[in-house]
Length: 197
Image 1 (cartoon, helix red, strand yellow):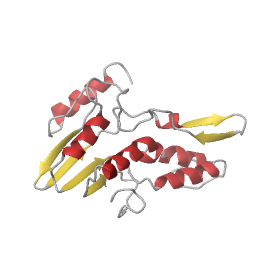
Image 2 (cartoon, rainbow, N blue to C red):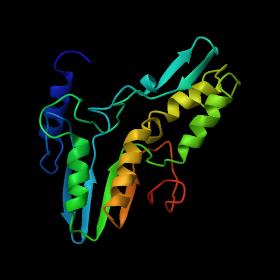
Image 3 (cartoon, helix red, strand yellow):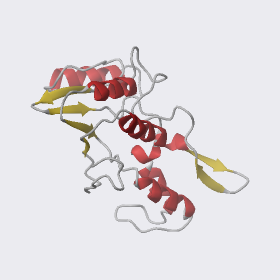
Image 4 (cartoon, helix red, strand yellow):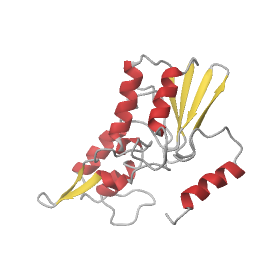
């Protein structure tokens, strides 16, 4: 991004979008709010996100792409991400643990569904097979589908696994994900997604 683009985006958001105070704007546009017995955690999954394609490397010996996210590969932002103070991940986990609300909603701009990792693995297995998907350029192969899916939580398994483990270890109940991706319209009771979505 050009110099100042990130800061200008945050300033533009604050000046033009009515909303709740940001938790740590040096780290992104995220916040939480309560409404009755509900607490909503609005996450920023772009400002501190690692590049999705960094999860892939080309194996010269095998002549294929390998899905191998490096350590610290994050969609939510860990301590090594841009900004100062508490990371978004740490803020989110602490806020979730300390929430006294009966229902906890996670607002996610991309699908959380960890079951999509199976689709990534299938696309990796079939990576050179031509595919036909509406809107995809002619001659597309399955590796393109893997690259696309890896832009959501399924491309950042350490983050989703850490969040799910944290929820389980701390006996946090009634957590539901609200995903706002118009390319994926689905409902899951948690069987595939990891959390109801």
